Structures are given as structure tokens and as C-alpha cells.
Image 1: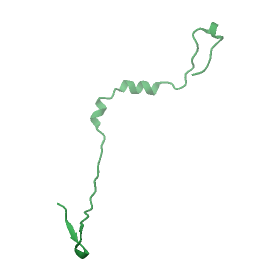
Image 2 (image 1 turned 30 degrees about the vertical axis):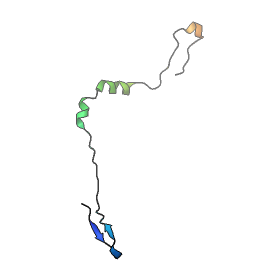
Image 3 (image 1 turned 90 degrees about the vertical axis):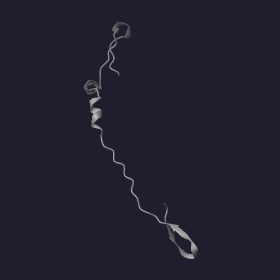
Image 4 (image 1 turned 45 degrees about the vertical axis):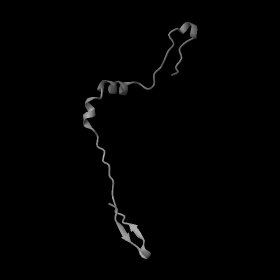
Length: 67
């Protein structure tokens, strides 16, 4: 129900009521049961810088050290 406040010259004004809408989001600890820990350790142990060598060195002319 909207409430009106009487104003001058027969007008009315809606009463503004302060409100606060707060949303609190907490971490769902039940999600930890579904996370595969093997994939996490595999991705952490992966080396970022790897040296790649071509398998056919004779036709290539040697090894190359590029990603």
C-alpha cells in the first residue's frame, strides 16, 4: 500500500521509505566433493617452458628450440 504525504495546494507526495537490498553469497562447500583433484594436480605440475625437437633430424637439418 502506497502512502501519500499531503503537500501544498492540494497536492500529494509519495512517502519515500528507505530500503536496503543486500545479497550475501557464500561459498558452497558441497562443490568440493565434485571437483576432480587429479586434474588440478596435473595442471599445476605441467611445465610451461618445454623444448621441442623434431623427430626427423636428417631432413630438418638439426633440432630447433621453439615452442
